[in-house]
Length: 175
Image (cartoon, rainbow, N blue to C red; front, top):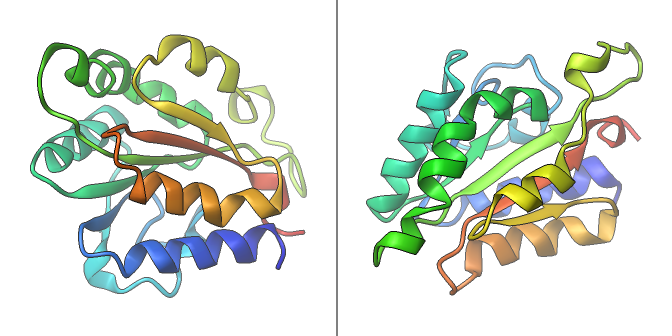
């Protein structure tokens, strides 16, 4: 399987798990590179969001506290920046000051430069910076095809109560 097929397989597997829901931009509606990996996900598992990233992350935080496992999708790193308050100051810190262990699978991508380069504000890779900022959320960059399914399966099945931030390469979606 290629990179995209592994992502699609992973999303379909996650959609069959009872506690999951996919939340983000381009989840129900097409429009991002990530959208195509969700084409066969049942509509009742998809919650389309407008461009309100911090609110989206906050909703996922609340749903996770209620026992759900949201797959919180930001099409590119640069959109995730707008949710950093909820990610760093809330989701990452809740396990430090309480007995709660909210689990969210956060999905983002390093922006594609092919076939059209959207320029520097949409193609950043901030993996290293976020690994430094986050203390209870594991950050995994999906560089190789053979890592994809096992990483998403691990993120769902982990029993340590941690959330997981998974970073994809959008340029590999069409390979």
